[in-house]
Amino acid sequence: MDQPKIAACFPKQVEIEAGKKYAYCTCGLSENQPFCDGKHKGSQFTPLVFEAKQSETAYYCQCKHTGNAPKCDGTHKTIGQTESADDSQEI
Figure 1 (cartoon, rainbow, N blue to C red):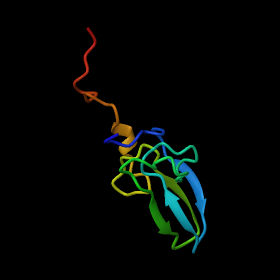
Figure 2 (cartoon, one colour):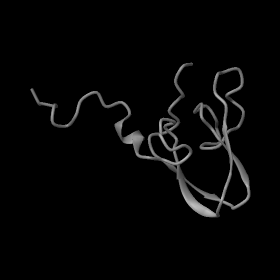
Figure 3 (cartoon, rainbow, N blue to C red):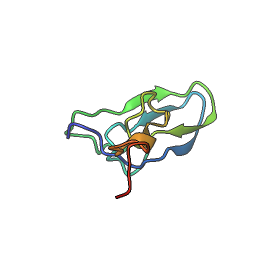
Figure 4 (cartoon, rainbow, N blue to C red):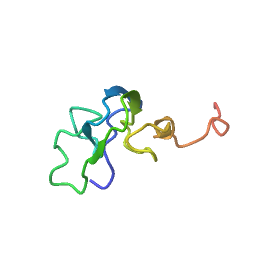
């Protein structure tokens, strides 16, 4: 598997607590999205481990293509698009 599995094409709202460590899933296989459950083992993927700097409601990427992991940057809106709306034509 060269690319992560797209777990969902929308972000997951999560409550994180200041000072607590989290492991964000980068492979997309976890059944505990957006967090790691160890399903990456045997692949080239590793979780993104971080300590929350503040308590907050956050929106974490589930498409696994964000440029701002673990937070969603809207990339999921372009996944799977092969043509722009301006290029599409009805025949």
